[in-house]
Length: 156
Length: 434
Image (cartoon, rainbow over all chains, first blue to last red; front, side, top):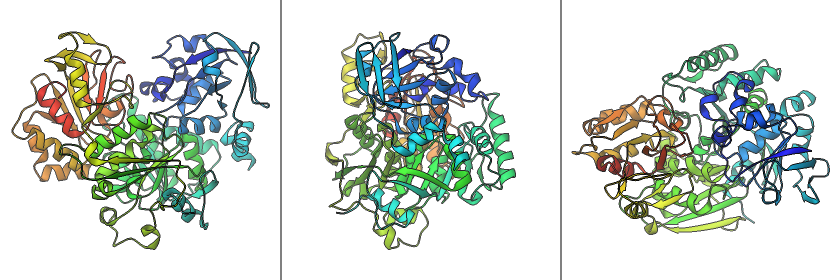
């Protein structure tokens, strides 16, 4: 089980991690500023194993890979939304952060609710309710299973 | 069954008879672009992956533009890391102060019609203006291309956009693409290819097409494509187009996810209002709404209501969206013989050194300077909130770039309106949205 942090539609990558922090040398130095303009306490409240649940088009805007990277560095287990912007989606899989397409969840949960994700079955459980997720294409699931693109290259 | 433009580009790239939307293919990369913000991360990932040489250094281009000239203490570090990377791995295509990456990639001849290119910036979609596939990726994927020369892509579905007729006076390709984004919404073309066609598009300069390709990512698109024609060939310095390039148009019987039809005569000057790029309103509506608000009040996500409209503190004309010669000339034609309002700061940033020199030679820059403009060095400038022009709470900027996200040009209470260079110049003179 992990706690939900819920965000609205069209959250752009500037809102996930603002431009002024992109020049910090490492992702670990940036992560305290995650979602700063939307929820200044997010970075201190989120715990490893928690979830980001958002409405459609999560991660639109720039190509910055630091956006999924700071979420992963904070221990976010998965991001669940009805749809993702394409660069954010690719970047997430490539760094080993599950970006999961899931309809209905955003409307059902609030920040602070506890949910569970069974990645293998593609099912989210929230109390008595379950939500099915869209499975990743096989080649993407392989990249994710190996922990991202770099570890996948090692195996290829 | 025919093919869409993107299906033809990808089939040719992999030497297949045909490919269809939904296919996952591995493409051969013709060109990559890395800019100064992400080069340190690309280098780290490249070395972490264990690569010791770049698959083809001549197909690799490094461009310093976001951090030029350096304005913060961290900036020069990126340039030193970039220079070291190029020395170590033999990259010779380096631009340190020549302009914005997306302008230079076609202007300097790195990307040609039919090519497949990737860049570490979301506005890499710009090169669709010459009929090339190009899109933005993260630094880890860029590192893997540098090592292998290849990348997997899913062949996207296509939204066909037909635009026919003659545009009204004072309406530009910026007004067209903003209107389309407003209709499709910020996620309306996610994962898809936008394919533009019709007599309006045929009549456009490559520069005007570039404005449209550039902004297709703002509705989520993977690419925004125009068929190459004689203007493209001339722009790219080609003798003519070969049979493959002449075939690069969407077939009538291709399968389209959606077809949008526009009449050019219906377009009007529009703005993307604070702070969503798909919050599109005709300029006339922005004015009439402001006129109904209380004079002197500060309205969140609008600005200070003054003189029956929205007071404008600053105007920015530049960026990879609208920093080309025709954009500067359009602004100059509005500003000729006039002066900007006394409280307005007008910042003009040519997209490249070449454009800067052309605008200098034909008197455009002098006209702008006489009207009160600050002319800055070519580069990204204020578009990415750097190198001067930062704004504060409740201020309003009318800008010709591509994003009006919260906090992009200063505090999160800055109101950013996106518009064409003509609208922007008019606002600079009036000191309010007109």
